Length: 125
Image 1 (cartoon, rainbow, N blue to C red):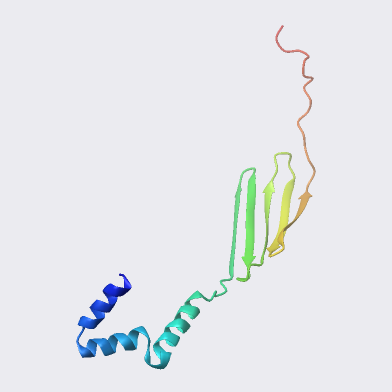
Image 2: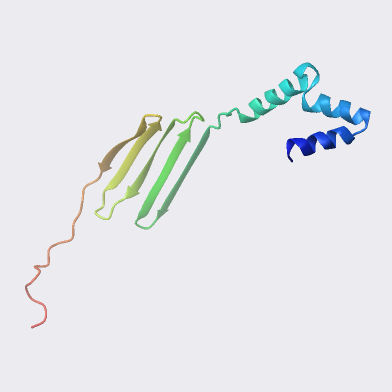
């Protein structure tokens, strides 16, 4: 609505309507405006929301999982693990914050590889 249209609309209101509109648009001594500004400011404040979760799957040769915690202020720490095809378990511990993601990778167990079958020898002739 343009300013001149709003002025015409305001002029046509009864006297009590003018008073109500002035009080609620500008506030008495600015009190309504200050109160509304405070509500708007409170609504935009970030509230910390910490969280934690974990899960794991173990079925046959499958074994993996993860756990993580967040402090609600952007800091996170956790880890995950997975069985690798060579028989080892890979574990990753990490933390993340404003400076980035910081993983620490480790392996446990001994790698097992299939026996060599002499590729290029034997087979069909």
